[in-house]
Image 1 (cartoon, rainbow, N blue to C red):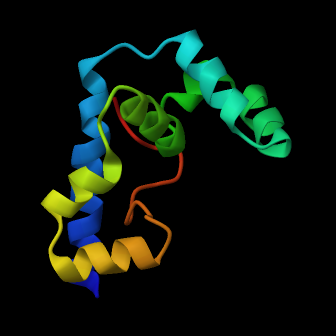
Image 2: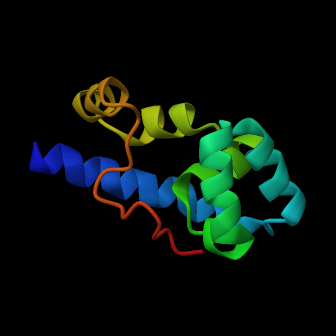
Image 3: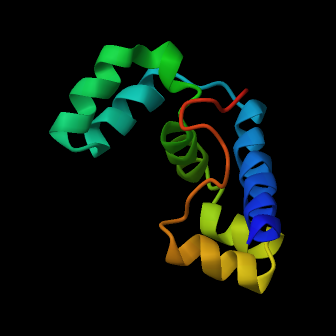
Amino acid sequence: MPDLLAEITHAAKAYYKQAANFTLTATDFYDWLDALPPTRRARVLARGFAASQAEPEFLRFCLEWRGYNCREFMAHQLSMAAFDLWTSNGEFNGDLPPHGIGR
């Protein structure tokens, strides 16, 4: 299991790193907020746009909006066993901290 977890973490880092290729905007942030459930929306709004730029969920929204499909990326990066683990557990980000994606 640890090898699969490391493989998923490495692939997730590579996926989110692609967000460095473009500027995140307030429009991205507000579009993402509109897609969130109301209770989550209030918490995210309280954290603000700057803090959200390190949020994997926000980065995935921005990447996918720009055509960087996470499932497709991970399918190409992961072994079959790691991809199965990733999909069967909610497409998690391995050992990445919940609010700590560097850009």
